Amino acid sequence: ITPKPSSQRIVRRAWRSAQRLGADLDLLWVTDHEPTEQEQEQIGALRQLASVFGAHLLIEHGDDIALVTQRVVNERSTTYVLMGTPKPRGAIRRLTQPALPFRLLRLLPGVDLRIVADRTKRTKEEP
Figure (cartoon, rainbow, N blue to C red):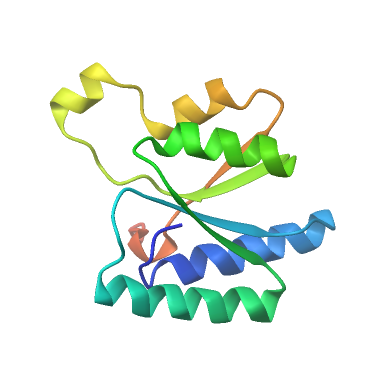
């Protein structure tokens, strides 16, 4: 997750998935900087939501989201990873490095990966 209001939607969907699976829920934010004041506010809201759901909010520092996620998944014996839609990347980055979901699939063999779409961005089909 990231400390943004849209992450609360992802947390709710992850909680519902965890309930169906009868599993614990861990929320992971991988950051490469100290949180800004605005991020601190969102972290507080996410902590509160995690508390309501009985989840664990983990904040890990690192430059590579995929590698930090791999470490945490291995440490916590995670079998199911749910993530929000990755943000768009520039053309150079698309050419030089695989997208995060593909890196996670490669780094996490035997772990299910689910990408949660932002339904607020869904376009309505014309009849």
